[in-house]
Length: 400
Image (cartoon, rainbow, N blue to C red):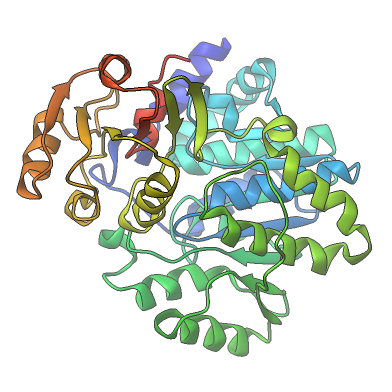
């Protein structure tokens, strides 16, 4: 089996949430991934692990921590999702992605057993990553949950410390309709005696974390303000920086100068992309994977603070997202470029335009992200700002 054949086989595993959403018998639970882990002889079980959950900020926090640890001379295996441009982004050591040969060999060696077991795409790719980390003898593993926490496949791990980032309304059909209920699902990663850092303290979600930590006898730490610089420039990154710094201070209190330096080298050390990332300077174009109401609250604030002229928003969205809660935050005097993407889970450009019109947001429709961006660049003046956002699928289609 070649690399291409192996990836195609993995993509064919059902359910595949990134491809299909929750429409194809989406299953959650820990029995399947535990049995798969046992079949593979528990790869990674002896490697210290950091487990991260949250609505927004998981990816940034994961890569902040990984970059900080790299500056300390540690080899850190990172499992994160979804990927943007290359399937192999899901498993990285520093900025090095999993090798094509390992992917091909791993799938080839186990394909018959996998077919019999019927594991999901997420379960298989998680175990692929952990198996590679074991093979490469990394010093640490960071596991980012896919969705939720309590029943997320990554929750079979036995971590040294947990981190819970922002709690917002997303995946409500699986996690609950209010932030307190969703926080309870995220709190499901808290384990007996294992320290947990929580970034966000507010009345609606606090009780979910305090009760779970008390029941598990887990030391609970609310992230304090560290005021550390970073090359991740979104204003929302201050929360992720505080959470990541709190984790590293608890693990490596004597090495702050090193891991703090790592926060300023996240892109270089890990290849992280798509969080208020500038992709063109004239006219200025930034790309951000923000895709829900909580993320857009920060994006709208950031755009208003940085734009000296008119704002141009190139927007796409997954079909299962609540775009009304996003649209109601967007400025009515901006120009809009509604776009579809190559992913079949994306809302049509016409569908987006219809929702936008309900909020007085008028724009043109495009079937291709790059065509939409080209049109925005033609229309933008020197002092204008173009923001490309709304979905990972939008950023993944960019021609860079």
